Length: 160
Image (cartoon, rainbow, N blue to C red; front, side):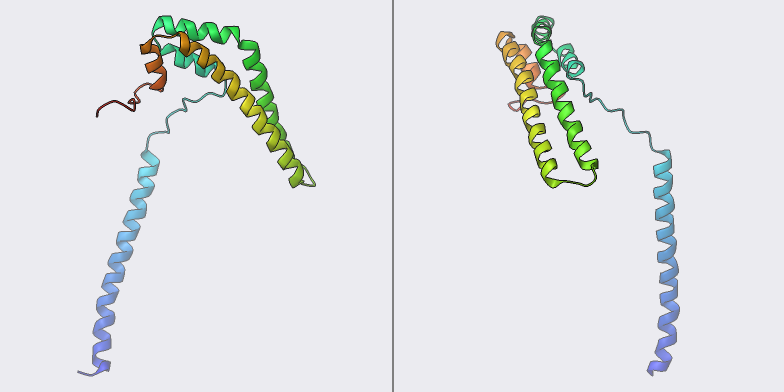
């Protein structure tokens, strides 16, 4: 058999494989398109930027006496929490404005991000101080609920 006789038979078979591969690829893309079209919508986010809404969600999962302790601490420190949260958001907005500014200044962005880090640290220390004071007054089950938050999370020491 010569090469001239072998070449037509190779191209005839490879055409079939090419057609079969193309068909499989088309079916894959059609299936993926249908799956995207009929999938359920993404679940709504459970996250809220307002710290008071988030703390209330946490309080709802605590034993009632411990929830009352947390709510009392939040109420007693509400002004400091609001101030630190407002300052943090203002610092975040300053970063956004710096990014939009023309002409852009990398040095101004660095300065704005430094202020944002400081504001975030102040906010974190404020809210963590409230939780520190609350946890010191809570029952063991209340502290365990805080450690396992969000609900359904297994504690680190739990056996599977």
